[in-house]
Structure formats: structure tokens, C-alpha cells
Length: 167
Image 1 (cartoon, rainbow, N blue to C red):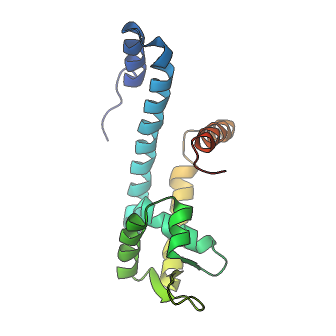
Image 2 (tube, one colour):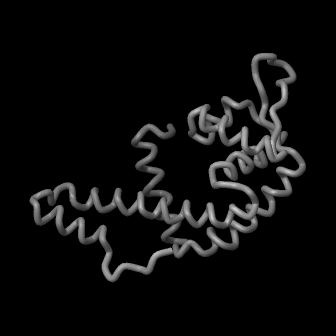
Image 3 (cartoon, rainbow, N blue to C red):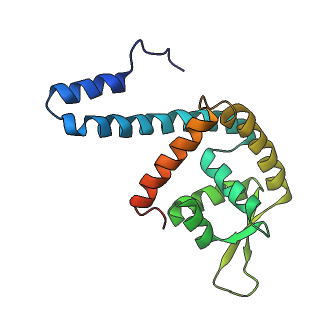
């Protein structure tokens, strides 16, 4: 990790936006840039925490989704929808998880055209360990107060809903 900068570069960019006459867009530019930078920081932290488990955050999300499902399995198409990722991205993650024995593809019991993703017992063990590590080392140490985390979630949920992310 690099040393902290002496001044916030996003705040500096906002000032530049204003000085160049883009005042009406300056706050949105700064907010969007800050969200992107924050997402990058959290993703880097999550991936570092998950690396000892042989996971990336994308692969962890697949395991977590299967772990929360009623039967420990879901159709690939449903998993893709719920994770909000393209089927190709999900396939890449599943290929890696399957090669390490954490998930398996199985035939759907009533629909021969559909493949189910199923969490293996080893996958459940890795999921439990990884979830504990994320809870302890990322989520509990997010540098967000409970109030700020709730407020931020609500702001972002409103934006996501207005953007058609969900109904």
C-alpha cells in the first residue's frame, strides 16, 4: 500500500472542475469518483483477506449466494441474475471454484436443459472461514460508523433503483 497523500486528490479535482466553470457538475464528479475509489479500496482489501482461502471477492460471492440458498444450489441463470453479472463472468468463477472442489455443476432434477450450481461440503467449509475473516477484518473494520454505513447504503440503494438496478 502506498503512503497516504497529503491532500485529497478528489477534492483537488473538484476545485479544478469549479475553476474551469463546471460548477454544476463538480459535486457529482467528486461523489462518483469517490465512490469508484472507495470501491477499489474495499475490493483490494477483500481480495487480500480472501487470497489465503484461494478466493477472490467474485468467487466468494458465488459461494455466499449458494450458502444462503435453501438447498445449497441454484440454476446458473438465477445465480447470474442475483449476482448481477454476465453469464460468462459467472462461468469463469464457477470453473475456478469447480476445479478446486468448492462447487459442482449438477443436472437439474426436473429440467434437463438446466444445470445447477451446488456448494460442496468443502465449499461450505471455505465459505464459513472466508465469511468469518471478511466479517472480522473488513466489515467490522470498514471505518464507517453504523449510522454512516446505513445512510450510505440507503443513498446508494436510491441511486441503484433510479438507475434500474432493481424495482
